[in-house]
Every structure is written in C-alpha cells, then in structure tokens.
Image (cartoon, rainbow, N blue to C red; front, side):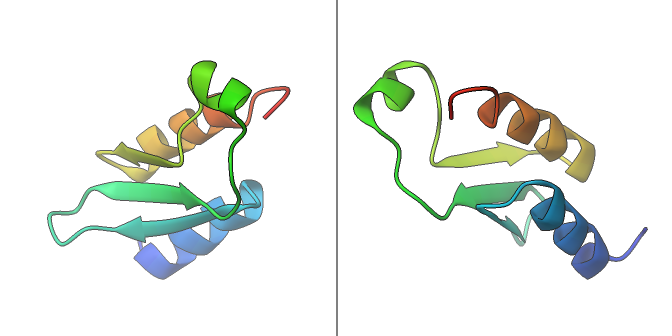
Length: 69
C-alpha cells in the first residue's frame, strides 16, 4: 500500500471518527470528528495527533481510542 489515498482510507476505516491528512512536509495527522469531555482531556486524549509516518499515526490512534474514549 504505497499510495497515500489507500493508506488514508484504511486508517480511517480502522479508526472511525478520525479524519486523516498529511502535511506538505510529509507528516501524518488525524483529527477527531467529535468533541472530547473535560475528563477525556485531563486523561490525555487529544483532538489532533501527528506522527512521522502511517505506522506511527496508527500507534497514536490505538492509544487515543483506548477504552473509555
């Protein structure tokens, strides 16, 4: 899967509620489509996460979608 559009679609399918995009510099980002509660923010959840590559982004999304998010 070398194509960005295919990788993006796969990540968004695996992590519903997140919109994936890539910067001009090549960093991968995902932004939540919903709001977080104050408790979730205090627990370390983020509205947007960034990584150097698709694998790193997936790891961050796994952490962000842990039980209770």
